[in-house]
Picture (cartoon, rainbow, N blue to C red):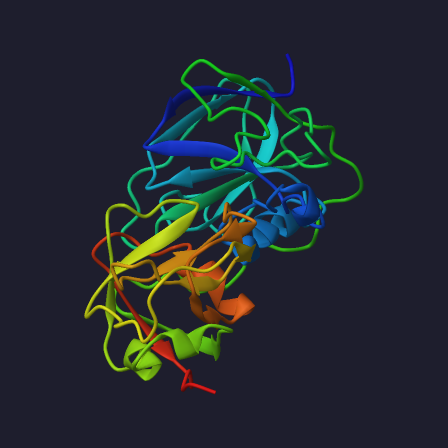
Amino acid sequence: MTRTLTVLATGPLTTVQDAGRPGLGALGVGRSGACDRAAAALANRLVGNHPDAAVLEATLGGLVVRAGTDLVVTTTGARCSAAHDAPTRLRAGAELRLGRPDTGLRTYLAVRGGIAVEPVLGSRSTDLLSGLGPPVLSSGDEVPVGSAAGPMPGVDLAPVPDPPGGEVTVRLLPGPRRDWFTSPAALTASAWEVTGESNRIGLRLAGVPLARARTGELASEGMVRGALQVPPSGQPVLFLADAPVTGGYPVVGYVEDADVDRCGQLRPGQTLRFRGAVAPR
């Protein structure tokens, strides 16, 4: 018996994720990592891993895996498994099936010992924008699991709320280019709908377009997770885990870092509301 998980089905998208590749922006390498960092870290803590160990990030459920040996597993984030927010033993040959979650978008599957694929530039994360890291998982893949070390934590259940299914409000900080818009405060005046074009790179939002006060475009500037960039359409893009390191459209604001994880759980059709002051300087 080997410490592996055999992937029997992947759902819409399943990738390997950890804490990402911080500090490489000057080389043109984005951080990547789990979209919902808090949920991924919680999953690791529940099975006794380091909080930055690699996990599986499943989008909208559908993941099915089979254990090659007895393993301790848990899931966090979008709820779609009986092993949710609590460690459980997955016996050799047994299957774990993630159904479609009622709310939220991304579920994290942690295995005691961590997902042990080869790291690239110090991380095991799959970056969809740059192509760095392991490939997106496919049916039939054998995913290696690391060796467990140390005692299991004394946790039976983590009482954390599931991702909400309705409108979500997040805190907004002013961006460096808010004076490029005639009324940047319009960003907080109404809710924005998450569109089906959203992915790990960013949420594409639809609402009343933000009107430009200036013409022309910017030279490329540094970009980070949580930046709210506005292309000529006036429809904002909120960057998530696989955000580019540079961008040429004006940034009207930033979602507070602690709230970006919550945005990574939003589904197409959900609405997002911003709270904060983004008046021109």
